[in-house]
Image (tube, rainbow, N blue to C red; front, side):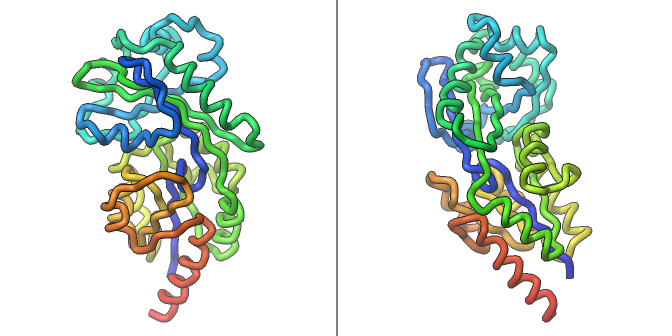
Length: 274
């Protein structure tokens, strides 16, 4: 009997620091849960931008984010949304926005950097939340993350047990691949800019290849994948409250990612007995 384990990234494998700025009110919101913020309105779309933090800091701070994206031909990925939208619809609003300026994004980058700069292994991703009803960019945001204590050892142990591991995350692929290299997860098992429905599709595809597929997540954007998985694990290593429906779909709740190993060991024994 074969088993595969799929991990979310931010909040599951990575201790994550998130900062958002409300570009309408000017409020900077540290330690924000970006998926909860996005899902609190049907009109919001969480977008990952293919930009580099240093280049944003060095850019003209008064420039519109939309103008910067157009000038540098910067693409984007839709991380999550409650609406069914096309990329063209989202892109039309993103690239014509008149609200957010580079300064708004730089503030988020600096705030996260101040929290994370002492970390030896770090990934940083920036993006925006587009409000389709505004229409325009409602929030700029930056996410920084480092591997949780025990994350690398967990992946190593699972591989030694013959259990392949995968990452399915809404983060940018290039950043995920760098972290996957550190953790020891092959790049062809990394799925970036994965919306909730894409995560669920990844689980369904893996179930065609493996007898048991385990999904390990921590956020509301993992619910669809957890429902599709044969065994759903909710991890609470990332501080913060989680909606009740996450607990409802989880087969097991753990405090640390390293607890995935004994869960898989028990599943191996159960499948062998069957």
